[in-house]
Length: 335
Image (cartoon, rainbow, N blue to C red; front, side, top):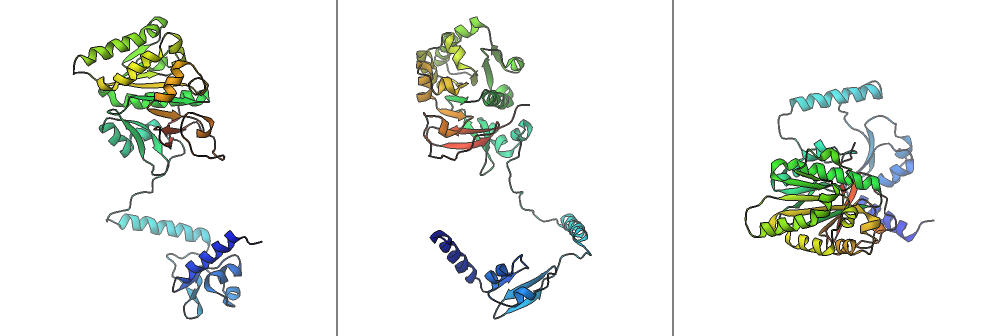
């Protein structure tokens, strides 16, 4: 049974076909498919299935033969001859060539990501590359001049770990232009201890980290010479258990950017997204950027479009939310 929508589509198709002065059809599986293009004609049943043979409708419908680029006794030979012809044309052509159609790779390696032109441009402009956008296949980055805080979370421990590795590795690509402090409360990322500028893991250091950072901010506020630091806290829950308070975070978030301190904070969605403790509540309301390794519909503190068919994200897929809208990104996958 044809619905009204189906009838409208058929009418639109027929209208589009009739707009062309001439119609051409190669052999189809069904004669009715040929008639749908060139109109009713007995030639639709009698046209021989020969390569290059076609029906063209002008004043009347005629059988025509199109010139073939190569010859061959069978399909394999034609295909091989066509490849050789293309290769010879490529070798002979010295003019400008069109750019390749950008495609998001099935697996994005860190080497490929960091060497993309849009990623290199971001690094040169002192922007933190976050991931590869699916539609335009370009890097999405956040300028350090605007980066106060980025929180990242997931309802999957594996996704959270992968996000941490990805963000750490991208931040290390700046070399001496960016200092990275890693507050590794559970020593899950000790392999980065020699790569980052400062590695903190002892209970004593973690219990003092808030006051040390506040002291550093105040010290910098008194001067005007300082370098950019990325303060990485992969497990905010444990740091809070060691004494980090809402008041501490509020001071650091409000003053850190002024003196070159940028905060990247990770945690499980069950803690940041659902907990009523003062720190996760503060993060939900005040974090500038949010990176989600989970479906938008499964969280309740960010604006989201209604989508009851939203697919679960792959391990190397995230959403980046700027408090207004979200963009889906491809990130690297930790081996």
